[in-house]
Image (cartoon, rainbow, N blue to C red; front, side, top):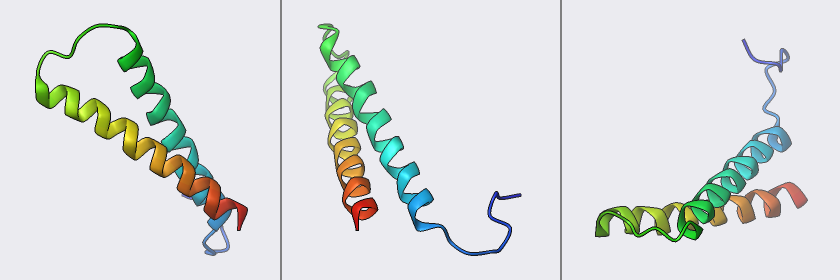
Length: 68
């Protein structure tokens, strides 16, 4: 059961969750990249950079939408 019993869509809460998810993905990707260890394979390295890029996009998008 959701917290919002009235059935209305709470945009600020939704975009806050997106923003937090993006921030978390960005932090985890940066920690993974900053450890200095090399990726086991090229696809893993691509996934690390993809997670970093998408996390930043989600975080910045959440900030922009929440500011409006």
